[in-house]
Structures are given as C-alpha cells and as structure tokens.
Length: 213
Ligand SMILES: [Mg+2]
Image (tube, rainbow, N blue to C red; front, side, top):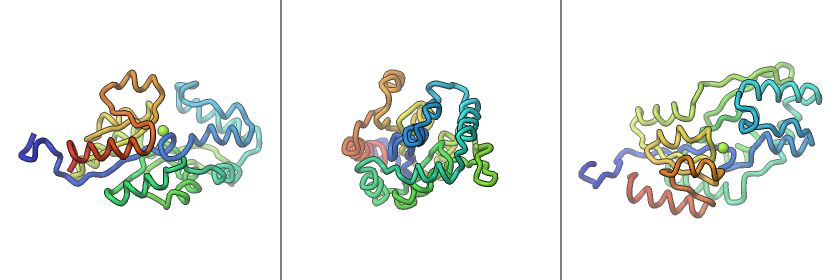
C-alpha cells in the first residue's frame, strides 16, 4: 500500500489472449471449414501438446493440406462481433500486446482484421508450404511476458479465457477471465469474469479506479 491508497502508479500494459477473447478458436474453425473431424481435438482431449501437434501435422499431410490452404481457411474467419471496437477502445487508453499460443503464420489473416496489434506468439516450421514442425518461442511465454513487463516497470492487466491463461492472469498485476469454461471459473474463484466486451470494459474501468493508475 502506498500514499495513493494502494494504487499501482506504474503505466500499465494490457495483455490479451487471442483465441476465445478476440477471435474464435482457430483449429476448431479449420476443422469445421475443411470438414476434417480429426482436427477438432484440442488440449482438452489430448493433454500432451506435442502429441497433439504431431497428430495435427499427420492429419494435414494425409489430406494434402499445406500452409496456404489453412491460411485461406483462416482468412474466412472473422474476429468476434465487437472485438475490433473493444481492442480499439483498449488501445486508445493503454498499450496493448496480444499474448497467444497460436502461430504467427496462422495469426496473420486475423491480425489484418484487428489492425495489426503487437502479438507475441510461436512459429511453425514450414518446408515448401508443408507444415513439418513448430517452434515454441518460449515455454510458458504468457507468464514469462507479464513477469518481464513487471521488470520493465509496467503494471499488467491480463485477460484470457482458458487454462493456458491462468498462470498469466494470476501473475499479472490484475487478471480477468473472459467467457471462460465453467470449470475454470470454479477453479479460479479469485479472478473476475467478463461474459462480454461491455462487462470487460466495466471491469477494466473498475480496476483502473481501484488498482491501476
Ligand atoms: Mg484462448
């Protein structure tokens, strides 16, 4: 607690998850739009992330799908209604960085629609447009990022929807769950929950008054 009544006086940086917060789940949409059911599996079905990614590469190969085919599919996706306006609102007031576990190669068509905000994510290894591997820039990069921003003198406001966000949400100066699955709400009762962008704006405005500068 300091003389300002416990407020964090540092400039703050908003750290947003991408999928489930601003845009729909990319792999689920690729599965739907290509009609390949085997691509529907997520980390909820296969706990081992590396195993899941190998499965995805194998399935894409079996169907002869290349990176260009997948980005064509992703280009038909749109941000959630209101996402662009919400992001603009946030960027008008604060610096914003998107922290995502997706791949830069997949994110491009969606970033275009979001006005190219800063994004930290991972990369695919592509050979002749064929997906052969992936490269995590850093394990646990979301949590590592909010910790690093703290070291750079920022207070952080993080918002995400699922298990891969909870370490970041708890490690940030303030964390908000956005339309999370009910199980996540039960497991992390300390985190405020926003069910739509208006609610997120209200929660963020409240945090600005009470916690952040
Ligand atoms: Mg997400």
